[in-house]
Image (cartoon, rainbow, N blue to C red; front, top):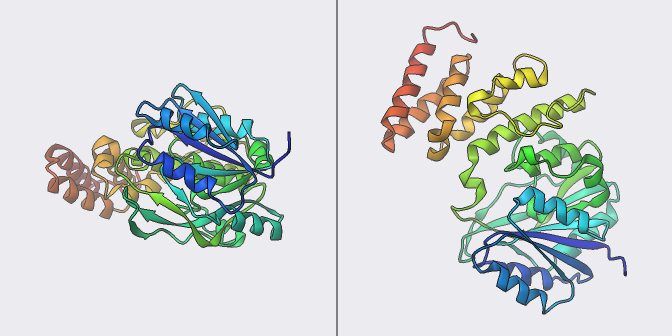
Amino acid sequence: MWLMRLSVLMSVYNNAPFVERAVASILDQTYRDFEFIIVNDGSTDGSTEILRHLAATDPRIRLVEQENRGLVASLNRGFAMAHSDWIARMDGDDESLPHRFATQLEFLDRHPDHGVIGTQMVNVDEQGRTIRLTNDYPRDATTFLAAMELLPLMSHPSAIIAKAAFEKVGGYRKIYRHCEDYDLWLRLSEVTKLCSVDEILYRYCVNPQQVTFQHLLHTAIGAAVAWQAHLQRSSGRPDPTEGLSALPGVDHLDELDRIFGMPGIARKVRARVAPKLLYSLPALTSGGARLIGDYVAEGGDRRPATRAVARMLRYGQIRGAGQLAGNLARSYFAPRGK
C-alpha cells in the first residue's frame, strides 16, 4: 500500500443533518492525498445510509461500523487503524475550509519540532450562519505552555496530530471522557510542541444537544483533575489517575486527596470548577450547587455562591437555592478554610 502522509479521522454518531456537508468539506480539500477513516459509532438516525453512499463514491473513504462505544473508544480505534504518520481530526457536524490541510502541513514542514497543529475557528449555527469567532487559540508553542491551565487551548477537531506522539502518551483516556482533548493536550505538551495557525480554517457547528452543553459539570471536574495529574507528572511523580476506571463524582471529590496521596487536591479542584458553573442551570441542579457550597465552606470566594443562588431562584429552583443559601450563610460563622 502507498504510504500517505495524512490520515483523516472522523467519528460519527447521529449527525445525519450535517454529515454529508462535513464529509464533502474533507473530500474537497486542496491537499488531496489522504485516507479518510470514518468510524460510525452506532448511529440510529440515518447517518449509516448516508455514510455508506458516500463511501461508495470515493476510494479514500474507509468506513468502519460499530456498536455505540463512545467518542474516546472510536477515536482510539481510528488512530490505531491509520496508515499515516499524521492524523487530522474532524467532527461529523462541522466543516473544514478547503485549504485547511495544505496550510497545516506547510506549517509542519517549517516547524518539524511540533507534534500538534490546530487552526483558529468560527462558530456557526445549524444553518451554517456565523455566530461569533471563538477564542484566540495560542499561535506558538511558548504561548501554549503559558496558557495550559486555561481552557480551551485548541480546537480539538481542527487538530493534526503526530501518530508517534499520540502513541507515546497512550492516546485518549476513558476516565477523562468529555474532556479527553484537554487531558491529551496536557500529556502531549510533555513530549512535543503544540499550537494553532493564524487562519480560521474550521467552522464549528453549535447546537444545544452537543455533549459540551450536556455534561458541563463532569467536563469541568475532569479538566481540573487532569491539570492536577499534569502537575504531578511534571514534578517527576507518577500520574495518580493512570489505571483508574473512573474519576470520583461530585459527591465524592474528597476521594481525590487519597488518590493523589496529598491533602488539598479536592479543594483545588472545587476552586477551579465553581466559577465555571454559574451560567449553566443543568450543571447547578445536577450537583454543581453542592460543589459550590462545599467550596465556600472550605473558605472559597463567596461570590460564585451568591450568583448561583440568584440564578437558581430566577429559574424557579427554590429548594436548591435555599440549600445553597443556607451553606452560604453558615460560611459567615464558620472558621474560614476549615
